[in-house]
Figure 1 (tube, helix red, strand yellow):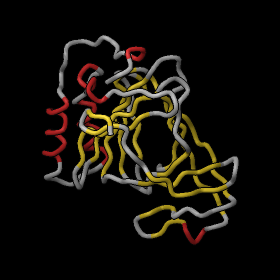
Figure 2 (cartoon, helix red, strand yellow):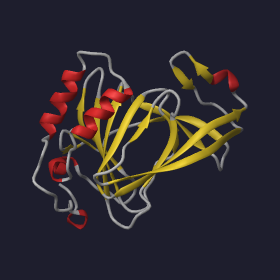
Figure 3 (cartoon, rainbow, N blue to C red):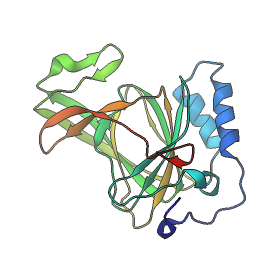
Figure 4 (tube, rainbow, N blue to C red):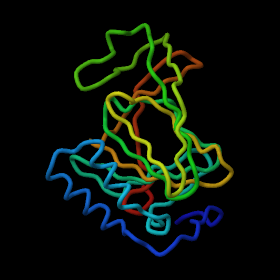
Length: 210
């Protein structure tokens, strides 16, 4: 199960269980899903680190993506970050996404696509990037800090490109909700001046390692 060297921090008594949280999301599916509605729900229904303990897994080589729940409209997961771990710069293709932190602190670096040599692959229907560029300009526009018990990071059609990093010295557990679920994204490699489609996978599902 979880590595003893990265034990979950002590927390206050639970306010919300994972089952309660998921059930609340399913009830929200009855109406139109918007960024604000889900953000308000997550702010009002926090999941503490102790409640997420079955979905906390660590590895030294890369952060872990741990699936809690998935249906046609929602994907819920934890991501566990050892110190220094970070994602590639990537886009969510206009997908809605929300992130809170149950343990530790992460930084989200937000970027804006300025130009590339594959403009025909930009802003196609329902997808903001198909990849394939070998020359590109991605400008950093800011950094958002999201810490245990405070803050939330969102993505939408306007702010879709970012990189998440655990710049601290302790393990971090973040909670992510996406709508709709997705299995790949476009990643940007600024050093090699290219962007490409990257397949995504889970380290664990339903509390069990894949």
